[in-house]
Image 1 (cartoon, rainbow, N blue to C red):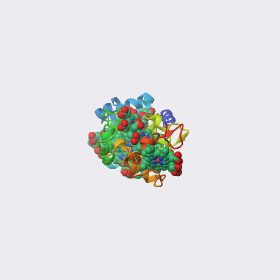
Image 2 (image 1 turned 90 degrees about the horizontal axis):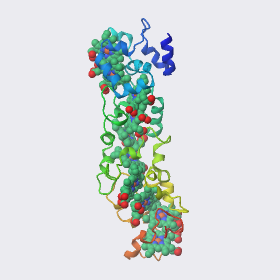
Image 3 (image 1 turned 60 degrees about the vertical axis):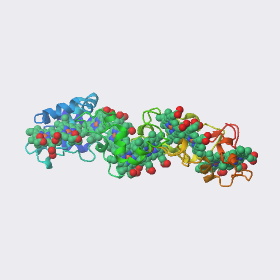
Length: 283
Ligand code: HEC
Ligand code: HEC
Ligand code: HEC
Ligand code: HEC
Ligand code: HEC
Ligand code: HEC
Ligand code: HEC
Ligand code: HEC
Ligand code: HEC
Ligand code: HEC
């Protein structure tokens, strides 16, 4: 009884108590018990990255982890048929120990849980060492590309951040799945330059005369984040077409039949914002 109470202190998850204690004799279904029949599997798990991470927290947590994921009933010891044990951990098995990661996922990339993407779609169990950071099933870019081929393909466009070339920008340079920043990921990505300014600090000022679209919609008001056919990853091939989408009523002296006036940023050089000129004609 004493051990069981210690365990509950470590993992405050009432749902586990029924699963981990054999109804018949109150023998805890610990790793030691599993190892009687699954010795190689148990030893490999304990020596792997997940097992070691658990043991670093507490040896007791590692002992209880087999049952936490597989949720066997006591009957499994006598009858290993599938109704007595889950080969694939049921939904919620991870949440018992990782409540904050599950909550972060809901908040940061709600599209994942809403579409039934599971923890184990992205993470390995730890029975085998995938050799990736965060126990990901595959290297981050490969993993993300398997479900987001369109975004991944954009990085091969002529104007894009090059993975490993332009300063090793990867999907995870901009995206956080669980919310490193304690806020909704899209807001973090977009608001006032968002993630872009972690590397392009100067582009978001602060300016005395900021160019409003950046403040309101972020860099993606004008730039494609993943890659583009257009120079500077702009949303339009000609800079002028981009500007005229929002400034159809330029002053009349802008004679757009002349090439000189079509080169908007030749004069409005401070397109990201200015400290001297509200018309963005000087930096
Ligand atoms: C008395 C022996 C015995 C013990 C103890 C035991 N198992 Fe099993 N287990 C088996 C047998 C036999 C099988 C079916 C053959 C196999 O896959 O090895 C099995 C299968 C499994 C499977 C795969 C199920 C499937 O559908 O393929 C899992 C997962 C599992 N056991 C987990 C555990 C866990 C966790 C423990 C400790 C709580 C445990 N076992 C304790 C004998 C045992
Ligand atoms: C984080 C959840 C998790 C933990 C903890 C865990 N497993 Fe597993 N286990 C899985 C998953 C998922 C699979 C399915 C194969 C895979 O993805 O590696 C699996 C597969 C198995 C199998 C079937 C192996 C096969 O090849 O058919 C056995 C047996 C097993 N686990 C036993 C254990 C034992 C014993 C422990 C404790 C040392 C343990 N597991 C800890 C998630 C877990
Ligand atoms: C019995 C408790 C327990 C269960 C159940 C459990 N984990 Fe863990 N896991 C831990 C601990 C402890 C760590 C070490 C990090 C920490 O303290 O948060 C960890 C670490 C991790 C890491 C980070 C590994 C690294 O190298 O950075 C991932 C990813 C992870 N777990 C995923 C899962 C997934 C997915 C499941 C469900 C299939 C799961 N865990 C189930 C206890 C658990
Ligand atoms: C198993 C498939 C799968 C994997 C792997 C996956 N995603 Fe997703 N992702 C989805 C689905 C489904 C959606 C929601 C529908 C949509 O918007 O396409 C989504 C949505 C998103 C969104 C939009 C935000 C939201 O909440 O809807 C972002 C950003 C995202 N994923 C980034 C990533 C990144 C980065 C990776 C790699 C670490 C990744 N995804 C891995 C399936 C996956
Ligand atoms: C769409 C893919 C995806 C899904 C689904 C997902 N994760 Fe993650 N997880 C990641 C990535 C990528 C990281 C690296 C950090 C980040 O981006 O937030 C990570 C990091 C982690 C970490 C390590 C955190 C650290 O600081 O080392 C744990 C633990 C974890 N995830 C657990 C879970 C659990 C539990 C679930 C299910 C509730 C889950 N993950 C679902 C992709 C995913
Ligand atoms: C340079 C930063 C950056 C990188 C690198 C990056 N993204 Fe994005 N991603 C963004 C921004 C910003 C948005 C929001 C775009 C918008 O709303 O117009 C976004 C949006 C998304 C969305 C949601 C699309 C939608 O329409 O809802 C997905 C999915 C996504 N990214 C996947 C990926 C994948 C997969 C990778 C790696 C191949 C990746 N991203 C790399 C910045 C980035
Ligand atoms: C992880 C760091 C990082 C992040 C985040 C990042 N960038 Fe970059 N970006 C770079 C590096 C490095 C270069 C290459 C600079 C050079 O060419 O000297 C670059 C180049 C660019 C260029 C092309 C410059 C040129 O002269 O061709 C544009 C446009 C750009 N980034 C826009 C963005 C936007 C928009 C975002 C947010 C969606 C963003 N970047 C996020 C690192 C980053
Ligand atoms: C109003 C549209 C607009 C917005 C919003 C915008 N940009 Fe730009 N950006 C441009 C244009 C146009 C160019 C090309 C400059 C030229 O034609 O001389 C450019 C060029 C760039 C360049 C490459 C050239 C250089 O000056 O280094 C980078 C990097 C860049 N932008 C980053 C960003 C970042 C980061 C943000 C968000 C904080 C952002 N931009 C917001 C329009 C915009
Ligand atoms: C997404 C919409 C959008 C785009 C694209 C855009 N702007 Fe603006 N710009 C605005 C808004 C909003 C203001 C604030 C003044 C207003 O409401 O007209 C502004 C202000 C300005 C001003 C200051 C003068 C004034 O009316 O206050 C200049 C100059 C300007 N933009 C030039 C440009 C140039 C050059 C480009 C192309 C590189 C461009 N803008 C692209 C939305 C945009
Ligand atoms: C040859 C230099 C030059 C070029 C090229 C140029 N502008 Fe201007 N623009 C100016 C000057 C100078 C002013 C200020 C006029 C004044 O003092 O009222 C101005 C004013 C503006 C204003 C502010 C209107 C107002 O008073 O609210 C906008 C918006 C603007 N330009 C957009 C553009 C766009 C879009 C382009 C490209 C199609 C462009 N400009 C090309 C020189 C230029």
